[in-house]
Length: 248
Ligand code: OAD
Image (tube, rainbow, N blue to C red; front, side, top):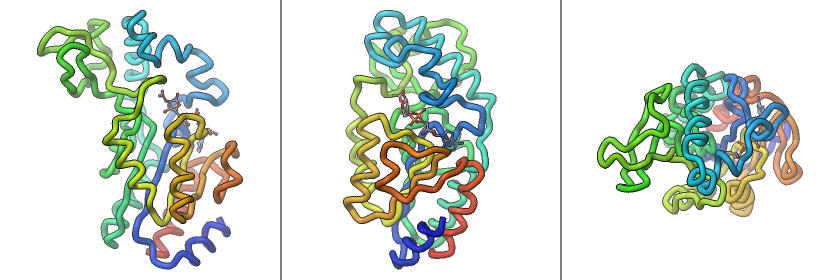
């Protein structure tokens, strides 16, 4: 934390703050991460439930997986980490500081906590796209009665509006994310940084001379490049937000 304080102090006026989150921020809300012990990818095969090929092969199985996740996540509440980031955004707004929250999470908990300027890089569990008419729509029915669900406009097969392995991020999201990385300070929270292109983002921020602080319960393969702050997001983000607010 001392390193972070010194870096912010030396930076001078903060004009732009960006946050990048992964599943670790929702761990204290009771939502499983992907690659930790007992993570989702220990129970499910990525290729079965998180690829376009898996969906074409067995849409029922994929929808059962997402329906189960929706049921679990619907019951979950944001934790102190999510709320601290919503408070940081509010404080940034008051001081005319640009604030962007980029998340790989599809759970919607940042929004539930009150964050506003959110870029959902991997889509949302609560949105669907029709495979036929390509309409995007909200979908909150939990549990889903008829699996796989059908489009209410054309009866085509619906798929979750999420980015699967082997798929590109939406161009618009990618452009906004890279623009957000041109910031004074980037907080990278609860992500293993193993999935691309998101794993590049903090390095892009570094190249643009941002302070990059990584908040995680354990070091990642990228930690040596950043200011590493060890701890649970729900326990230490309040202090980090407090620290940043001192320099607004
Ligand atoms: P991972 O499961 O790969 O990593 C979770 C990270 O959170 C690890 O580095 C943990 O150490 C850390 N962590 C766990 N609990 C924490 C806590 N309480 N506070 C802080 N950190 C904590 O999950 P992601 O990095 O989010 O994509 O995974 C990235 C993408 O891979 C996901 O969006 C998903 C997944 O496959 C798709 O499905 C396309």
